[in-house]
Image 1 (cartoon, rainbow, N blue to C red):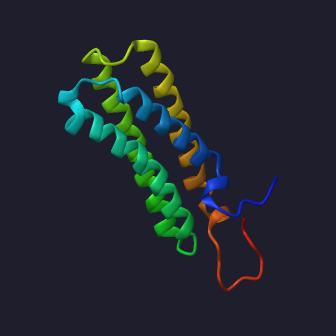
Image 2 (image 1 turned 135 degrees about the vertical axis):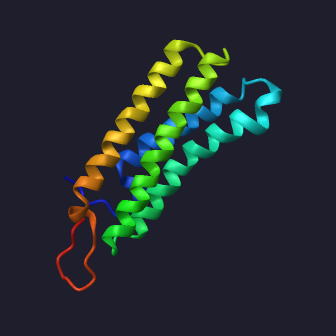
Length: 133
């Protein structure tokens, strides 16, 4: 297993970023009246997943802060799923697209949960000479 030196090397970050870009592209086709409501909300929640992961990475010296940021990313992923369900019900996205995105976000949440459960592996102890990552 290769050493990860940055949040950008985390599979969960890569998956979240890719999914966020997919949502960005898809929401370009939403009606203009949704620009400052559903489009803005779903884009913010997808981006918050990525930023939360980056923030968690930088807070690895503090287990509670690391876990808290990952948990926030998990809740943003669930929020994204809700926004996508609204997009489906409003007819802005088709069921196949929403199902595929929902599966991606389920996978992302599972990755985040595994990181939370294994937080001790990721946390950096500044008093230790042993690197945890």
